Image 1 (cartoon, helix red, strand yellow):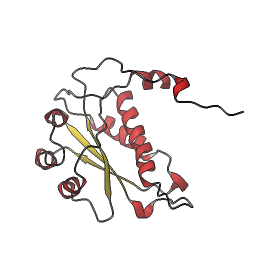
Image 2: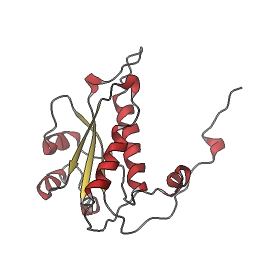
Image 3: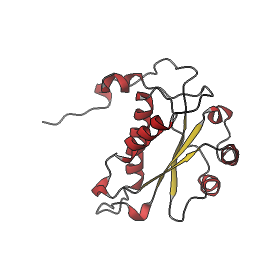
Image 4: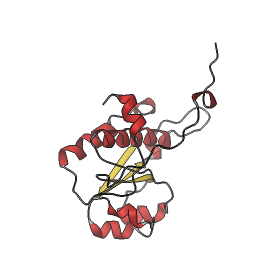
Length: 168
């Protein structure tokens, strides 16, 4: 499938088959995230891959949606602010860098036939504790990862004219 088709067909998945994910596929997905561009190539990204039930149980205190835990894998995308590039007005690009890497991960997963769902509505302090994140590592997003049980219909997107301005 070409890239535009991949982007057009990708959906947020909220129902997963119990099938485990092949290590080769998981490694390719994580490699896609690792290769994402970052500001000044600082690479202030850090990922945690969760497969065990005990850690998943601990994460329920951070995000308590049962469908989320039907996936065989949960990935936490984190940033390391002290490693990030900072723009001259003080804007730290850590979250931007992690967002780009997470998008690479999500598209890489879809290309491998796996589903994800970007989650930001969690309790960061609980995630930090549950995942035993090192000092200075901040959780930015979570995603379940697994084979979709169902694929939702396309969602509405704004027209290109509503999100674009061309100068010149």
